[in-house]
Image 1 (cartoon, rainbow over the protein chains, first blue to last red):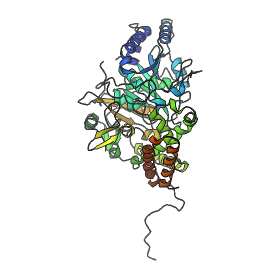
Image 2: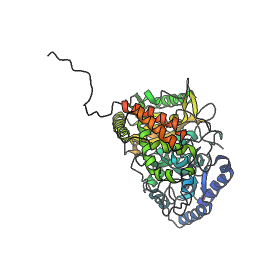
Image 3: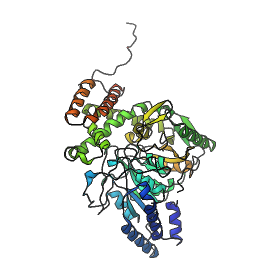
Image 4: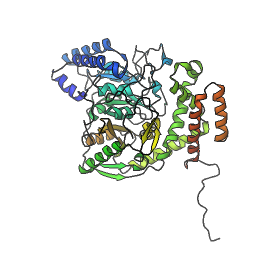
Length: 451
Length: 57
């Protein structure tokens, strides 16, 4: 698959055009979307018009920077002017966005081409992209399996070359989980850095907007464009020799699929061999994060959906409706307890990072689960899929630290594994420098979908 | 309200609203709430509880 970086070089060398690459993406959508169900809305005519304009601008010497003419997809949770924002739900029937979300406006200014809007778990309230009014999305590595979620369609679109990059949202892991399951890079920036206006919320205190891409460099280019800084160059990688990484084994490595554990340990060995220092550390209240996260997300989501649950409950998919209804039973005093836990966990992650450049841990404890599975066997026990999918990512939504998922090879069955790096709060660029240094060591292109 | 009495009331309410499928979810939420309330990061009006001080008095 072509990266944004490669596209930009060839575009400026006049070896290709934005129109040609956009046409190629549309051909892939036509060929693969019926099987994988990645897109809810394909914006073919608009994308080709934008691509032609991008080509004309380049010919006229008007170069808007690294995203100029790049075909990207957008999770169907963000507003694009004149296009429905479905949130993969019948509840949103008839909606058409009257303006661009600020992030979309920034991408438009950067010259990006919007190729379409992608499938997701309904209202982003799930980790598998199975419960969607538009049907389940499927993992390109094995279509009987989930692509992860909730930004599942976004991850598929990038993994298969239907788009060069995409924008997702992440409330408990919804960028990093599908990136891990589909073998690409997913970046959740630090909380509050990227605007969440014009995005259908799940929890306004946990929601993040960020990119999924083929490489860390591409994720970096997309991240800066989201901030409105379209001409930014990727930062230099941090030197790998002397890099200080902290590994929180307790809780984060307690419950791992054997193949996921093997790929993770190999990545650790490669980083150590290259000169990185990796210390064992502990986040004392990590095992309480699931209850903290649950009480916050349920109450926040229930508040947003209460009115629609009263008037059009039958329009939700059954599982999502039930989880939203559950949120209406959370006590106020327990929400406050969860906020206390959030503060404690934030301080603990801050402390873990005070002497280290980043935390390192797996992104997903299991490979992509089968569509329809309620539990997955890990070791001696069958664990609920939802708990497993969120287990390693939700902590950093609760604390707000930036986190990035990167491919780290395949299981013997050919399913992607992923390593997660976590940086200091409001220092996403520093995390990206660490990720650039680690990318090739931990697996690089191994695990990419070949079609 | 204790978690036990809350759960009974919630289950009855869900039944009354025609949502019996909520039962296992509410039971799971009750287990999670029990964990939350038992965590040592919660404040207590009676003050922090620590080991009794050893004195020579």
